[in-house]
Image (cartoon, rainbow over the protein chains, first blue to last red):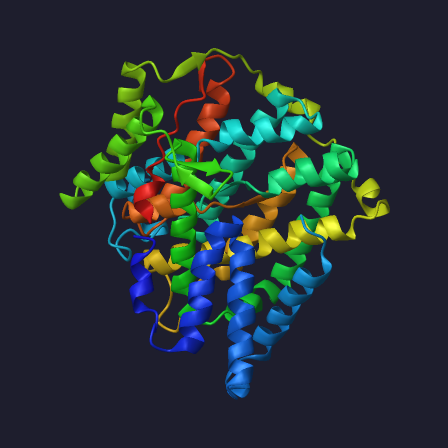
Length: 78
Length: 356
């Protein structure tokens, strides 16, 4: 039901499959949707940058990914 | 009146009926009703009076959910968020020795910041920045998360020193009841019974009562007890203490939990537009932000969208009177508690397992 949508994820495209998998596994294991989303967006942005697709995405994505990264680095463990 | 409501909530466009909506609303209510007991239990550790927090929990959940349904027409139920209440209690009040009044002030400020971010259109842009291909993954992650919580609550999965988690005691009556509930719901769903989850939960509850697994402890609450927490917040204090980090955590978690829940639930409910945007987004955010502000005034930690809303959606309802319904029941239970005996510590057979 909540999982039925994941069939539509492009599992054969690593630049989507890897962030999607990270979101799926880290939401329950960190008990936080926000944290899971952070892992997904950071990895997604990193993969877009590394594969030279950076310009296809909105700059907001990179800003968000950078903010998430800063949060992990600088906000004390809660 | 009835047809007017049907037109307002777009019954025809969403291909839905009163029966479907009421079933879905009840399903969401039952899945998230635990918050009525759990939230006050956690927050009262700070020294906030239990009766007052119970009342404010119910009232804010009712206020938020009705606002979400009536204003935004989305099946999202709101209540004081789990996780944020623990952060409020154990990290802010216990850990940093901040008085609860000041912590409520920080919640208030974070609520006002949401509202400003919403009115400035920033939250809408944040959401648009999340690639739509990842929306389904968020929905799936939420499904796994709820399943995990359900498995833990039922004792089917328990903590273990050696492997972190392990299988629970299958000889205990509570876990056996949970297994029965899961199987029973699965069978009903295989037969495509619409109210599968609701029937499954109620049947499990009936069985639990039969086997004396549910204890009734009568407790009387006067809803007026809310006076002990309402308007006790200390905003000036929250600005004075080194509160930037606290406000940031409240803001961050609520913002992205909310966005995640929104993306997940609307993706599943088929409410996203063909271009992968979510209609009436500003109204959803407005309802959420307002509820957090009202929550801090009444006396509870950050109010946010509940992932349990997905139980109602999975129970097959795309429109939203159910969200209003989910919490008018919450409202009722708040007034009922003033006189009626209230059930405490039931084995909580959560319907959510089957959601995933």
